[in-house]
Image (cartoon, rainbow, N blue to C red; front, side, top):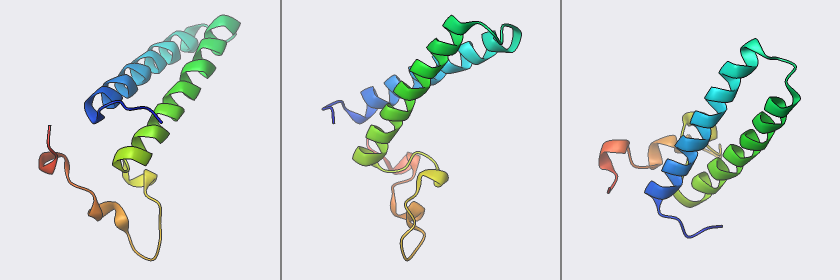
Length: 85
C-alpha cells in the first residue's frame, strides 16, 4: 500500500482511466493490434490495482464497490461535498 494522498491517488486513477478510454477508442478501429491489446491489458491491471488501493484506504468509489455485510454501508462514507479537500 502506498502513502499517496487521497487526491494524488484519485488523480492517478483518473489518468489510468483516461489512458484506457483512449486505448478503447483505438481498438474500435484496430481490433487485432496486439501492441494495443497488450497496452490495454497492462493499463486495465494498473487501474484495477489503483482502484483497489483507493477503496482499501478511503472507501468505495461507487455503489458497486460496497462490501455488503448485514446492512447497506454505502451511506456510511462521506458524500463528496462532505469530504475535506
